[in-house]
Image 1 (cartoon, rainbow, N blue to C red):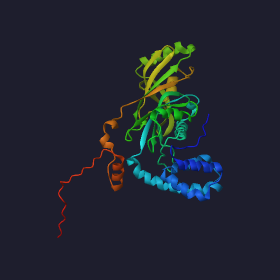
Image 2: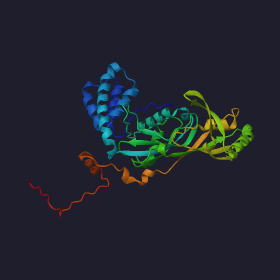
Image 3: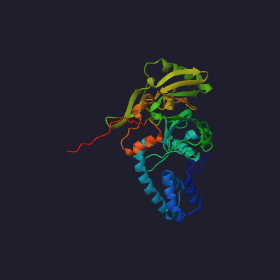
Image 4: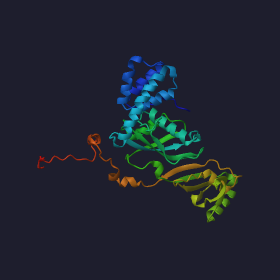
Length: 350
């Protein structure tokens, strides 16, 4: 079931005012300047632009407001690009979530859009990305294959400011606005300098419930695969600039293949540049006549983040008076020392 809740943020009165204006059917000429000023002061220009875009309004009526909002949004984006890394209010959350039917029928881009929509509708102060056409700053971990359920997936989300609600309450709030089959399990705070979750994904853990009529044949073929040093399959590829096929060894891609009753459990490594689809790997091992259905990714294993042990290396460096003021205001790891014993500075003339 598709959710149609408009994006909002806790305390963003300007977005509420814009939503009321949209609901009325016509922009109020006498309040536009104040509305634009409020959106800018609350740092919700991009959110307002997204709200207008999703409403699919008549350009003849709303085109003027959209153009003025976009002009301010572009100026704001330019300023944010220089300040975002040292913003003292910025927060990052790491989400653990599950994807079941029918949500698993969506491609990663669609799933990302649904997750961003749920976060905004739940009232989280989600930051917008720095693209020319901004979208919620939400980043998925290693993508799920289409039509495969995932019981423990990961995503990172950037927030403009701390969420007003306690972290323990956020999953329930988000899930109230999530599409069917998408459910957030936990929200964890992480440092802003932490590695993106997609960079930390190391292994996928999988479960395949083998149909009873195929169990004997499946066990034999998996035993042959596990006992082999190499297991090559043909794969489409370019050879000397022309379309063709090549043979690749898939034996190293599947790890710890074990049977637990009628269920096959195995792991696949996740390396940068590798995009092996477990459904296709199993089909190649078991044969085309054996249907691979019901495959589930039970969890994605994350590696240790080396950045967490190098906090000082990734702390924002002071470059100008503005950044000095921002960091001092934020109460960071900066101490002010008042030393009355300093020698006075004497400037000698020539």
